[in-house]
Image (cartoon, rainbow, N blue to C red; front, side):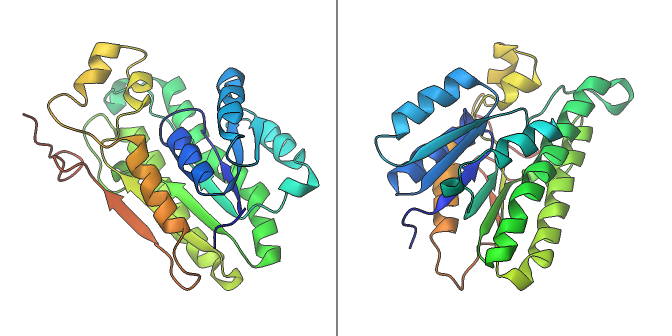
Length: 252
């Protein structure tokens, strides 16, 4: 049922996005890989092209015009996108609200919320016209539970949660599936970015437990995409076994 469906993946050059691209390539999906790091995109395209058809789009997701120009530049053969995976996102800083860095706030809102909207606005009309499609939004447990110093990151992921629920309602008449994946602790570049490249502090976020990996989330995305036509995985929360909530984590 998944033969040569076209999948559009944002944030495909690392972490969950890259792991998902690799797994979907093995399962006969055609891939549009998106990111802002040209060298990584080209390397991934070369690796996966031996398994499936792959094209890439280079753009900064927080720049609306770049998003529009990139997506509209797709050749005709790639325009009928079957699956949109809104994966791109980030966390910047870990400060209490009263001393937060406004540039960090802007980055999280621009990428996690506005970027998702920009990409969705370009792709969803085609799905609606065809009355077919599947949207997968990568949320977070931070979109369900706030935690100390998470403030604006949590707010951005609460927005993703609200947008996902709204999409499901708005797109229902067109028969488009909408899936939310809400992970807990996943070891990717996430913490390294949040802590401004401080590798030791980033490693401490996962110290004493076995976190989820990008491959674990990719498995769940593949599962959601391969359900029968009448079945949608609407909302999926996933933790490492050592985690019980946003703030309760067992560390050895």
